[in-house]
Image 1 (tube, rainbow, N blue to C red):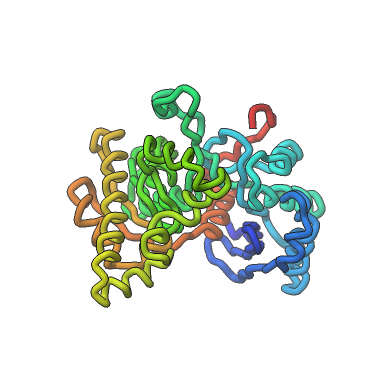
Image 2 (image 1 turned 90 degrees about the vertical axis):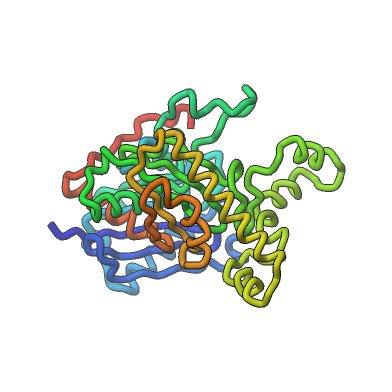
Length: 359
């Protein structure tokens, strides 16, 4: 059955929108919001009006009435421990998104979609929010310090999407697969997608460093640095996430630039890039142990996966574990649309968000 899906995915300074006919994107646009408009807002929730207006303006410009859509697919924010897959957007979910303690524009997608769905009388869903890892087994939450519990937030949307696609290509029942998906972007996460759900992962603050994040640095040395009066807490957080990783060593967060430096004979750049690849490979190896080595495959995805030289650095270290597949880039918009199409076709159920308790 043909489904026409409106996809809404807000980012820090823009709101991505797209129109899909089933899995085929027919139109897309990144609606850039003026910085002064963003700066005038005290909270993320204050951005709701102009972001919704921008989405409505896009539809009007394309002459696409809301009622012409089968459903709306919205990016999910951080609203608790959700199961993977789709959640029907209702007032409770929208309000939980509006009040999320994690300040990110993605929280507004469900609020916008809820209002638009009511106006048009069509269903709206979030799909694979970053908190859609389910309730993990206790063994996966033990960190080594009772005061610190591992947060279960990762690149769920893109990681599950490539695992779903790969299982179909391999003609495997997703429920009987175990893929390790390394999301190689500005931040790196290595995700174990077992039985179609996130079972465990190495987060961007506990494993490999990335182009701009420090990863899991030695904790005692980090504690000493934090109390050295060199950085404020805010500066330290920025040092770890934004100014760390490859950028801290090479003064660039661009893998392409780092590889150009390597081509010009820069040995330091070669060492840093190889170290990043090796640490990612080590994280993949760590996830393999959770499944006792019983893996269906390893998938390398994200922006850095466009580099054949970089993926080869990883593959040579992990190919003995399982077949390795490279799926460069991200497919967030398509993943949202395809997820909702599966719900509309009855292939997947949609969960119901019934309480905001504990989010």
